[in-house]
Length: 287
Image 1 (cartoon, rainbow, N blue to C red):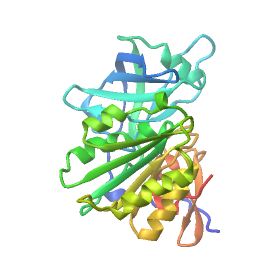
Image 2 (cartoon, rainbow, N blue to C red):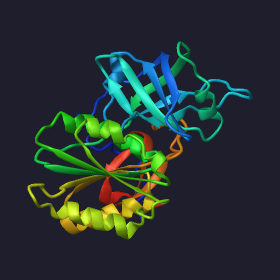
Image 3 (cartoon, one colour):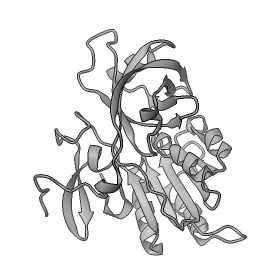
Image 4 (spheres, one colour):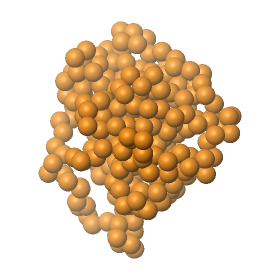
């Protein structure tokens, strides 16, 4: 096992200098998407709308009915609209922080810090990307649709997994950006790993004028990440995973978000907040 050096190198840091700011943003809307998830849209300055897919913001959740949450909440950006000056977050109400977020009304102020972390890459030469996600991972991968839509030479297919059809989010958003979406759900018996593997193998083979998938992006499921690792390794294709982890500072100072990664057979430790949250698919260690 390799211990992390005192000052670990941030991969490609010289190419990834992003502006970061803390601002009080006005709430534009904060509506329920379904029985579990809500979408918060904020008015945002250019430094925020420059966020890249896979990056996140640190949210200062307001005081709810009880005590105010002590730590900020990390949340990946769901959508940016530089023309309108908006950023959006898709979130599930799971605790005190997100409960207080759910109470925000249009016109309220909301303090956010970001954009933070390292986002996704879309290398030149990629012809067909596969987005593979479950649960809130759908929110993390959604911004990639904007990137793909700006690259007419790149085709995109998404396999989204959820417990029930009503929890398959972002389908219309993805379709509007030219992404072909395949939904699989537990309630319909279509989300088993072997079923998803069959779908993926068809996409990896290509055919009928459709280029084979040559890049995989995933988030939100350990079992789907392991499947993506296996198939990407078999094909020798590019892949990235967005890791989820509890965070405190979100800036790399507290080291509470350190996870293990397998780099060339050695286990190394990296901070998800500043050396991720997006990592090489094959280096991620399942949890």
